[in-house]
Length: 233
Image (cartoon, rainbow, N blue to C red; front, side, top):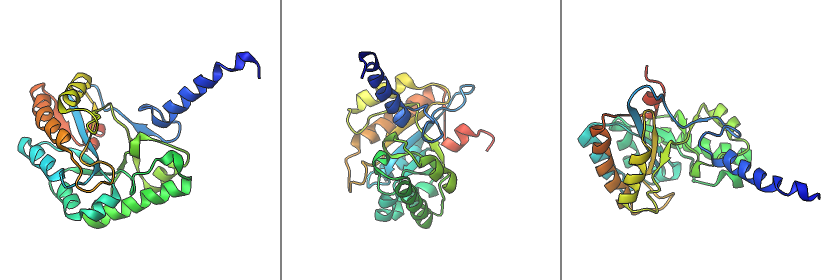
């Protein structure tokens, strides 16, 4: 191989990394990561639930009368069906976050579609809601995901800002999201930790307690992903 070809290797790797997980990438499947910048509205979203800690988050959202979007894992819905139902009954939107929370880049197109289909059916069976929105586990898109989304009538949703609430302390999570919020932002937090039972989501709960009133004080309206992206709904 000519030495002139070597610089292309890191460039190709960087492109592939962006294609798989870049928030604005539609290489493997179409997705949205931001709503209209024309009005002061944001969407608060939660991944990996439901968990035993989800009711604490629901209480905070109810206190401030704000809706959110919960991307649920089918396996967690099977484990905690009453909590999953409570999310929908409280007026929040429910999205698909896969059934088993796999890394899609390690799966075949058929396996990806089957996992998402199983989550769709499980969520609908236990909550009465058939998700219209999908957030891929770890934000990873892969071969076959576009076809699965089309067949299951799912719209991919990434995020404008992610809190890293599974690894940072609450101060850092709040600071990170507060610095990145803007009109139309989609903010990502986690009311579970993949498929773990009884996960510690104390950082997430504290973040929500502090972040929601902060956003309201800044003049933002908090909306579901559906309302943020389709304001006429």
